Amino acid sequence: MKILNPQKTGSLIATIRKQQNRTQQDLANELGVSSAAVSKWERGIGFPDVSLVEPLATSLGITIAELFKGERINDSVDNEYESLLADVVKVSVDEITKKKKIANWIIAIAVAVLYLLISVISNKWEITWVVWIVYCFYRIFTEYIYKKY
Image 1 (cartoon, rainbow, N blue to C red):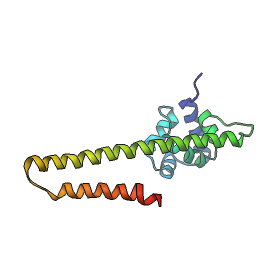
Image 2: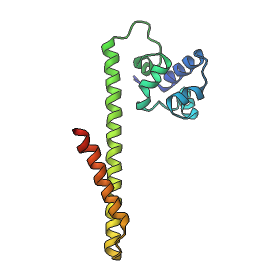
Image 3: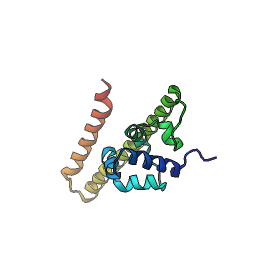
Image 4: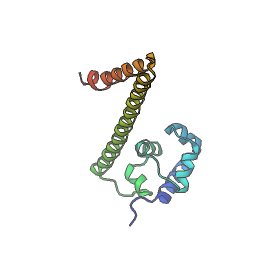
C-alpha cells in the first residue's frame, strides 16, 4: 500500500486551485516557487518539498492530512492527528535546515583552511584568509553564543 500518491495529491491541488480561480503562477508566487514546480505537483511527477507542505495546505484551505491523502476527508480530522502531522513536517524542515547549516560550515572552514595553506606554501600572507577566518568566528559567535543569551 502506497502512503503518498503524488498523482492523487496533484489532482487535488489542481482541482482546488481551479475552484479558487487561481493560476499555477498565482499559487507559485504565494509559495515562492516556480509555476513549473506547481505543474509538476499537479501532474503527479513530484511532491512538494516538506517545507512547503503546511503553507500549501493552508493556501488551498485543506488539512495536511488531506494533502497527504490526496483527497478531501468528509469526517472531521482529529485535531491531535493534524497537530501530529504538522509537528512531523516541522521537525523534518528543522532537520533539513540543520543539515544545510552544517554543510555550509564545512565549506566555509574548508575554504578558510585552503586560504591558510596557500598562504603558507606561497609565503604570501593575503588578508583574504584572515578576513575569512574572522568572519567564521563572527558567525559562530552570533549564531551559537550570542543567541543563547
